[in-house]
Length: 107
Length: 117
Image (cartoon, rainbow over all chains, first blue to last red):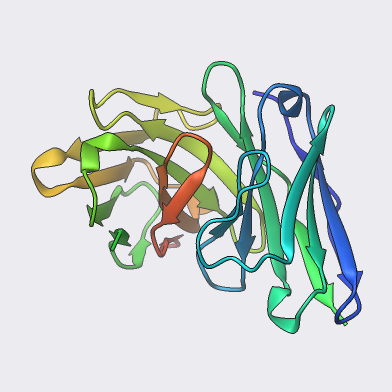
């Protein structure tokens, strides 16, 4: 299965907007899912499909995709959004791959 | 409500085996596949593979063949990860997660497996 590459770390000022990207060949065919993982906790699904938020996920989280790149945008970042974020996709055989992860720091 | 509850932390010596359980509740167990993922200390998530809960057929990611075995007990809605011949580099948190087709919507709390002499 193909790799998914993410920037290791990004920072954002409180209330500002940050975009996290995920790049890989499988994204040309499949949407990414996105997970938030806080220190010492299990991941939580925050986005999937074209731009779908599970119940309970704030609407400041949104997804987009173009070519081989998927993006997660946090519009109006809050302190509680500080976490690691992982993208997830699959190849044509159904095998998954996780992205390398992005640490988001809210300043 | 949907829950995946994993077994507790394990401390094992090199060469030993460990079995991690993942007990599902709140939904029809056979309706969703179960994925397994590993997270070594300070590292990212690594997909280990998945098991088809209708057929019991497992699929393993590269690097997780041979010593890693996925199994089920559908009578108690549980999935299992069995690791043999443990090595220090197997020290990690292991997660199970429910695959709803376009991602993993519910995750277990994770099981820390520590391999140390």
